[in-house]
Image (cartoon, rainbow, N blue to C red; front, side, top):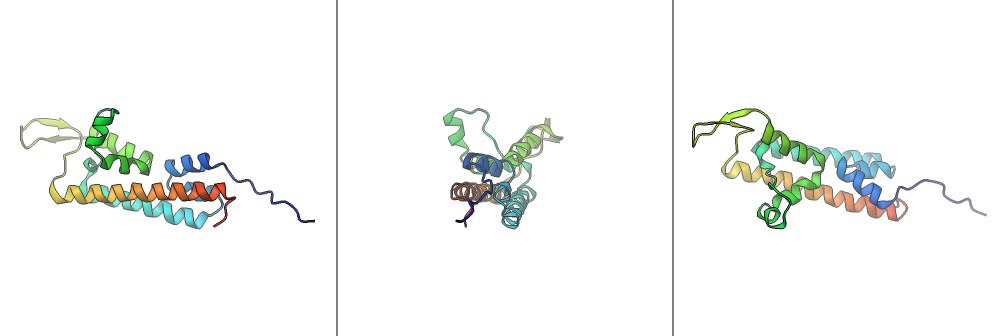
Length: 150
């Protein structure tokens, strides 16, 4: 008679939420620590590279949560998939520091906007980091539903 497997496997929604909150944590909860570390570091470095290239204002959150406002900035849907680091970056961009607006000459609160291709490249990096994290969340929650099998 074989002994039943007594390893605890967290439910898929718990793994998905943990993987969204901290990139790679879903895999770590399944016991796949190396995979979780590699995925988490990759996502965070890609997101930070986007911020370094384009500045903090590449995270351009809509001002409201109504559907028309969200669809005016569709890249934010991809960016927010990185989890709380996107929300923290957006908060910092809008509430940290001051700068002089070149158009009006007035002192503004927040971080200066980036322009042209630099902004586009930064948005692209952060959006790709979010989509990569979404794929990791889906994969880790699927593995949780299969008992952690690869």
